Image (cartoon, rainbow, N blue to C red):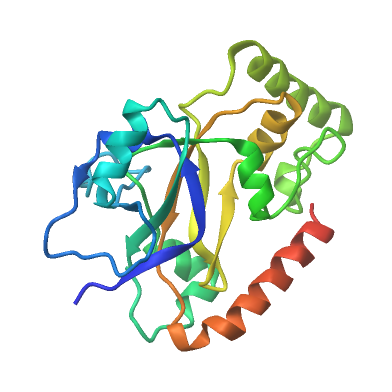
Length: 235
């Protein structure tokens, strides 16, 4: 039996992005109280030959269509996914290499205000000109001049052309301790978008699995502490 899991956060997304989705199959039902739920599919962004399971609208078609008709910029959406990890597997969500073994991406990109992402406190680090492109791996180390130059180039491009949808941010659902969503890739783009006061960026969602439900209360506390610790000692 397929296990449907849900994002830890509600995201305000452009309803026009949701209106183009097909409805989820009748055999899949949402046990969520949220008014609009998107069920992401599976896409391998590194192998175009692999078959794609497309995102669908699990709940809220009338609300989405009404929002589009009224010209609303964003509406609240819960993101759902079918777990690729066993129901009682509490190890894989905690270990990066195992998490990435099961990871898949949404088939569509969506649009959101980056300031909302920041308000959700799901970034693992905050990138600025001072700490841009600082990595612990010696293979990727650059001089301060090179780092600041790259950040400024990205900022100049975004200031002139806006956010490039070809490079969506990656929000991984239940990434942190198998319970909390986090921004997985795109921290520099996030930092620049905030600096440039850009109000609309593209995102894709990714997921692998979720920790067993009986562990959620404990893991939720641990996840928050872990994220706070990463932000405090970011690099």
